[in-house]
Length: 532
Image 1 (cartoon, rainbow, N blue to C red):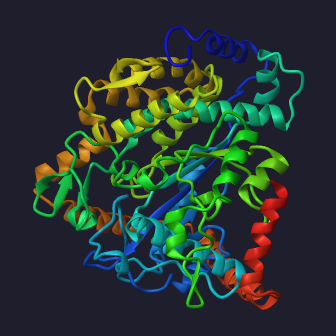
Image 2 (cartoon, rainbow, N blue to C red):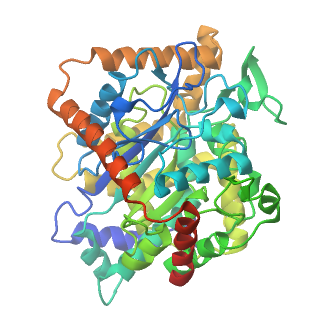
């Protein structure tokens, strides 16, 4: 059984790593972060100004771009082997951005500031090239399908790949005949299945959106309580962002995308992006000469599927995510369920990144049976319960058809991570991974130590509304970055050069288009049909 009892397979695999002659097998995996932040005015409204030109072209700048809204900046680090180097780069990115924001702030929480309906959230603009127009039309489609409010929610994505030297040792432990891309992909999919089983723990430990500004749900049905005037919350919530109020919307509730194998994953995603949906057909695709969405299918493109974790491979120009996976197999995984941490200026911290690295290894090494439809429903329900009620005393989750206390299950998982953290701590006298794990164990034993509880305690102690608290922390973070000394001038100069170069790249793209947008779209979707 997966998730309960003694996991003999896990014990064997850990023993194989410990007994290997290779030292530091789990160390130096590649890790990167994508961190979103809403640009807001000094009085806390979503900025209506274009993406600042000094930050470069959102279309072609690899490290500073926008997500769904023109006001939702996304900062992207390259992959690093060490968490501290990744965080230093992310800090430098923030400092560069703040030098070019003028009076504006980067909002310090996942849930947005004061919103005045959909029209207050500007859709991201990427210029006049076909690829830029496609990105914009896709976002228009999201607005029509789900409303733009969802596009004002920010998050942190953590990208991770295991060190190459791990695979031969794991293959030996699993009695695999060869180490090839199929073996590696199959093991990443084992990780994905176990993340679906155990990922609720990430929501409990790091969820930091237990409250929202009342403007976020104005005119919508909800069951939130009032904490103070203008502030709504769930008493035991961890992450309203990852609840049905945020990304886990009803439109995609019936969408079943298998992670039992790469082939099944590609099959299901391909079906979703090629199956018409009656509700979306009513919206229309091209109305009065203007595109409302890319198509009227269940998903316009693969990225519309809102999952907690994704298998990824860097795509070539014009290549779709499923085509990239079919071509080269899984290259890394993207953890997508992290809220922006209001207590960390860059939105994430080293302890969290170290825990996630060890948690990825846990999900890889534990027994991982295929997931059937009924189990998937239970797993989805566990995530939804923890998002809304994760700190509730005595809360129980469904494990293999039986009710088990979250606390009991969480402590079992953390206990199983001890050996993994010891491997990650090899030759590190300060044992940073074990220390990070200890911090998380403390949160399981005392829910008041979780970020979601800390945020609510802050609101109660100060008497601030959610809006006032988030605005104050946003100003604190701005001061932190602008006063940081000494700045890394060499890296800041590199960012400035990249920004300038990105504008030139966008102009080249726009000048080189040789077909109409209609032709471009038709060709893009035809390429998927032939690949499938």
